[in-house]
Length: 151
Image (cartoon, rainbow, N blue to C red; front, side):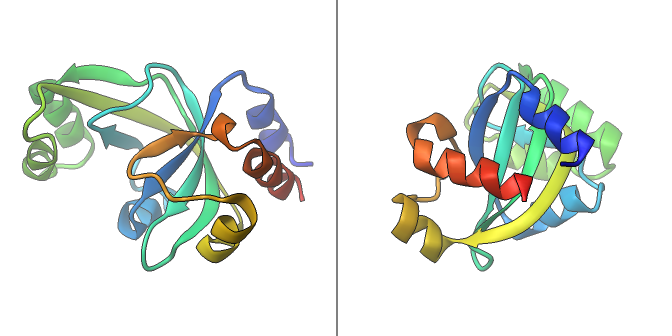
């Protein structure tokens, strides 16, 4: 097994499934996006299996997230602008209606052979989350995803 993968699996982090749209996922995969912004998130580092939404509809990657930074919107917009000039207005719109949010550092991204939504629903009673879900609520899927990463 690849040493980096073993290191990730040994980390005592909460495991989640996180939904991403295809474009942000592609930016993460290419290393162009190094921070994920969310209106709500857990307050600890996380290991996330990534569900890429329509039209892809697959779980196809594993991302290690660092410690989330919870801040007011102005601070988050400043962080975003520091990483990608011109991204602040779109981010401010995304955070409309909330007073704070999260900037979550992306530490690594590993792709693996995808699992289709059809397989996930039929074999594991999986319904894609709007934002994220704790993987511990579906132990069968958790075992299948960990096994998939090791092959």
